[in-house]
Each structure stands twice: as C-alpha cells, then as structure tokens.
Length: 488
Image 1 (spheres, rainbow, N blue to C red):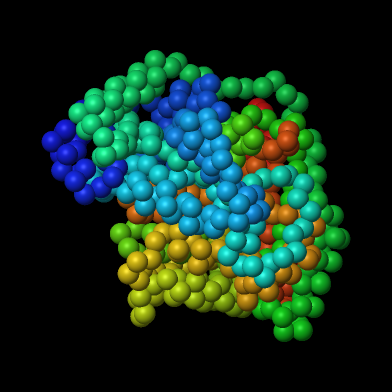
Image 2: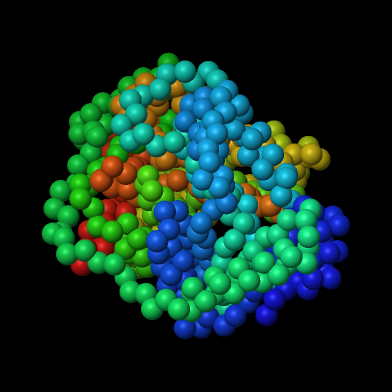
C-alpha cells in the first residue's frame, strides 16, 4: 500500500519542502535484524535503532537505514560534508548551525498513524563535542582512538518495522520543488526496490570461529582509578565542585563480529535505546538506558539517571538492594543534584514556569544493575529549535558533574584519554522537528581492530574509592559479557 496519494502529496508540497511517501507490506516472517542484514549487505554505512520499555515491551517501531544521502563529519575546527561522492571542508563553522540548516531546508509534515521518524540526521555527538559550546574547555587529553567529534548521516530513505502490525514500512522522501509526478513515480519505484531487497534476502548471521575472549584490559589499574577518585575528592573539599563523574575504559583485542555483539545486547540487556551503527571507520553497538534530551511537538524532556546498585541473585536480595539504594543518603543527594542540573538545562530553552519534575527518584532495573531515575519536562520557547536544545544540555550532568563546566575541566585533567564517544549522545534529528537522543553509555565501540567499553561513577565528598571502582565494573559487565558470549 502506498500513502499518501499523489493529490495528497501536492497538498503537502504547498507547505513543506519535503514530503515522505510510505509503502507498507506484510513482514510477519521478518524481523528488524533480518531486514537490517538484508539492507546493509554490501553497504559501507547503515544503522538500526530500536527501543524496549520497562525491560520487556518493544517500542512500536524499529528503524533501519542504509545508503545515506549526505554525511557530516567534524573534528576540531573542521567539518567535512560529503554528498554524491564529493566532499568539501568548512573551517571554523558552528556545526550546530550547519546541521540545523540541513533540517530547515528539508522540513516535512507529521503524518498521523505513520512512524514518528521519517527522515533526517542520525549519528552521534562525541563527549568532546561540548568544546563547540563551552570554549573554556581548552585542555584536551590524549586522543588514541581518533573518533570524530561528531558524525551524522542524512537519510532520505529508510525502513520502519511495525512491531504492532508486523509490517515493514519503506519511507522515501521526495522534494517538493520539482516535477511531483516524476518524483512520486520515482519514490514508488525506490520503495518497491527496497521491499524487493528485503523479500529476496535469505539472511543468516555471520559467525567467526575465534577463540573465546580471555583477557580484558583497561587504561587504568584499580590503584590508578582510586587515586583519581582521591584527587577528585580534594577538589570537592576545596569547593571547586560538588560532584564529578570519572571513568575507566576497557579494551578487548580481536573482538567478535560487532553485529553479533549487538544481537547479544538486545537479548540480554534490553534498553530504551538500542542502536547499531556500521561505517567504514568504526562500528557501534549500544544499549543505553538514559535519555539525554527529547523533543516532541514542542515539548522537551530529559531523564537523569544517578544512583546504582548491582542486581541481586534472587528476588529477595534484589528487593534488599533496592531498599538499600533508596535509603542511601549519598545516592539520593547525588541524584537530586543532577535532577536540578537537568531542570537548569531545560530552563535555558523552555518557557518560564513550564519546567517540572514529573516523576522523581523511581528505581529502574536492567540486566546487571538498577538505577534511580527521574523525569524532567518543559515547553520550548517560541523559535527554539531541537539543536538549540541539544546545545543547552551538552554534556549531561550525569556524565560530567556539577558545576558542569568545572567538573569537565577536572575530567580533562584526571582522565588520561580523550573520552570520544563515551558520555556523548546518539540519536536522530527528524525533518518533522522532533529529536530523540540518548547518552552514549552501555556501548561497545569497534575501532582499529579493538572493542572499547567505558564506564564511570559519580564522585562526591563521601565517596569510597574502592566502591566507585567497583561501580564502573558493574556498569561495564553487560557489554563485556556480550563480547564474550557473541563468540559462542
């Protein structure tokens, strides 16, 4: 089934420069995994975005894309823009302004009863992208992975898998400034070609006959991490900061196939933000629990997560750990501090009096850990764009500290490697004005023949260095387990 009709496209084209066209067909014998495998074969770049709510309920749509129309890649003061195989470099440009111009030039309508993301920008902003907005951060730690500070791809064609109706929906965006008859016919043809590629693939997973992972390294010894915590506490006692998040990075040589690791993560650690990115430079497999910021119909939301316990071995011990977490004054104080940071971040872009905490300090469970979680929401001021909202919240207080800028300066001083992807944000920026981004945690980065997993802990005045070290290992456990089990 094709929707909208050509006549309806003409009506939309009178108001918008871009119009999405949808081709829906039954896919009850397919899955998002098999569709991704079919569409990504032979492609350098592809993505898969999924979501599981409350640990068991799949979000209605999974999104799959390949063959992007445009690429934005920035490192430091240079941004490279690639389109139709040709690249140009812009220097000293504000990347947020450049990206917003792409979204503005392709605004599209929201069409009821169809997917909420129909095309736009997808990718990541690294932790260090904050240097585009916080010019005080001049000291940069050693960069040993060489990841771009931001890397986003523009997708005009993608597929949404509808979990409710077991349908696949091919989405092709057409430009409203040309021959609409010809463009509509082309959109219909492209949708049919993509559907045929999905239907014609009899895909199997790719397995490698490798030896099991038997060594996981780190960029820090336990003693070095605890020394870092002690130095941070000195800054806290001196009044520089109230809290700071310090991390360590785990490394695995000769890791298993990255997509198989993603499949393990989605099975064993289902999360609100599941994502897999394939590029010629790197691959990313993530299962993040934490929203950074979301914009839907002019409403912005953020969701601070702070306060952690490992999962119990049985229901009784799990309940005991939950009670311990809720009663822990240190964890509660840290969480409250970061909720206040979230309110302040949204307050910079929301209408006065609209920012509110809608759910405070509940416990959410994941496969290896449980967390304290709150929800903060507000109504955007007139004229505020999604990328303005992102600019206002970088980077998350739950991955930096408070006060935020001073905490990030201390992170630059104490951590011995540039964070890169860890603590940044992954998500989409739609032509329809919506945005959904998560914090890049619980994520495996494949780069230069290695797999990297990074995890941190929030340091406050009464932090115990050994306990904070153990928290980082608990947080990394789900990803390291997926790396081990993906070979089996």
